Image 1 (cartoon, rainbow, N blue to C red):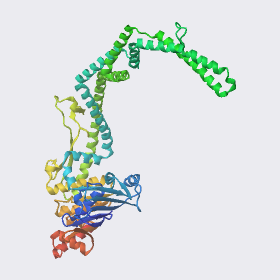
Image 2 (cartoon, one colour; image 1 turned 90 degrees about the horizontal axis):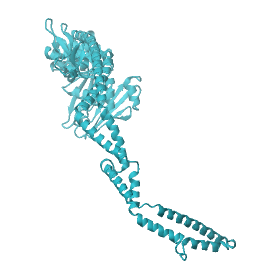
Image 3 (cartoon, rainbow, N blue to C red; image 1 turned 60 degrees about the horizontal axis):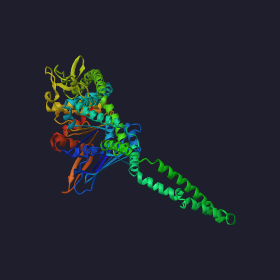
Image 4 (cartoon, one colour; image 1 turned 180 degrees about the horizontal axis):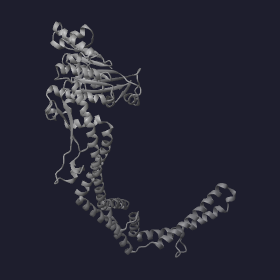
Length: 578
């Protein structure tokens, strides 16, 4: 792994080779270079304060060796990234204004994708993780992670059932607590539907009745106009001298028809006059029928207006027109059926809720059994690691318990596990706590209370090493997890990390010479500044330079003969005692 950072508070290039690499230097220097830069590369929060004053942006680049079939490689290729000679190129650019861009294998990608790859590339263990492990919830997560599929499979089933139970319970709550509101809504819908059913409106009826009312209201004027028009076309039979339009057109047609053979143009006009005569005769006949059939009955008009008033009453309440009223009726009938079916729905949901709670009880018992089996193996592994870390008499155990509910508690608050009603949550009914007995004869106590500062650091390091052994990621970064450890215990910490490095790449940011001496490679990070700009230089320490740095870490005096002798002894111990 190669990390290059430009425009960050520190500028440097760090080569992290396989095996065990120790990063040392003045307090904070190594951490800023390695941990912060690596955090940005792996999708961490982009803080604009990281950009050096005067720089427009900060750029962090990384080159990670990775196999073509590795999960991270597959996910990167799915995003369009390409491997470069078996390496994945990652870059992150952070502007002084806070904007952030990410590139993966030459392709611009969302920053979130870097976070997805992080789990498959690097496992970061630091002091923050130690404090997190003091919380019972974090300890449960740790145990579940160690247990693998033995817990993951039933936990996935449990989580799905728990999610469904919450949804069912919420719907039940809504149905039962809003019964009054639903009853009122149903009464209003039922009243409206009854009112519409009583009126029996027909599609388009309002439009037809409006036209009929207009016609009946002007029946006399319409009849008079139709009669006059008919007389103009067909003549008045009571007046023999009256000249009507049909007769005049017929005469004109006869005059042209007599000579039509002499001129085609006149023949065409004769034909048109014939068509006009036929049309006028038809219109005259229809006018006569219209006048005879026109109903001027005031009773019918009153009935039409009464019907229109009834329909207008519906449209004022349920829709703009009869079509809108009928649409409201259809929707309301469906809603009323839904409301009327609430009782049946409540019964169905109640049965499903009870079945889900029973299923959760069985799955919770399965989770408890799996966690109990894994807890023994986990505790034994951590205890074995503590023996390697100069705590040979310490014993770690994992307590798994449930909170039993009193008989007066609401049954919905618990599930039945092993014949008892216990509290439960989204991860089961178990409460997990890591206990430590640091010395023979001392009772096991929670690690936050049963360990001193140095012991706590070793316990947490042992936990992290156990995790690392079961974690498939190729690189582990330990950020000062050896804080509070010294003397012989520090030597054992270094030895244990060196053994871990035989199966994975291990990077340790440390201020302990006993730990650094066990590293295959030691990097020194030194800060320099010219009064305005701070830079970090990274030097690979070998031979005499490494002895001088270990002497400085031991006694603060690079040239002290005693410190040099001690440093050389540490290096020799590390070479022969891995």
